[in-house]
Length: 132
Image (cartoon, rainbow, N blue to C red; front, side, top):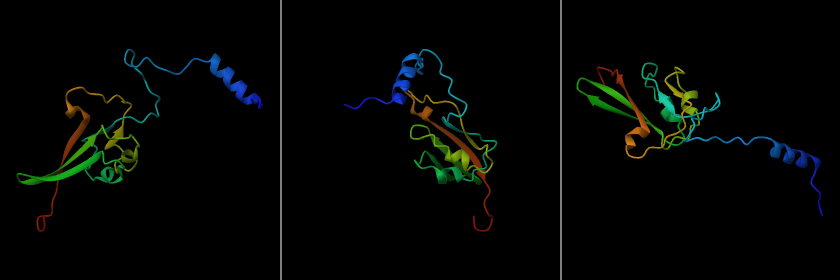
């Protein structure tokens, strides 16, 4: 018969005497640690529309589309929180370092309106007059 090591016994006693780290989330608001990575948000005034974040997103949660609108073009950037894994690559590769930032929000559950599961911003594009 193999006896437990002293380290394992010490760890078991410490676990029995300490409080568990659980929260009463739906009933009490949970405040995550400062280094927690939550939902990414675009900040329209700081985003330049370079799509660096779209290129590094491993799940395809970030997308963009260039559309012609009247006299010019605009780029529509969209983040889908339902498939985002909060890896932080978008924030890491942002040119301005403030165009897209991960927040502390983690609850993305919705019941009726699926439009609440994404954020969308529009940036005006400047095109070459000769070749468009």
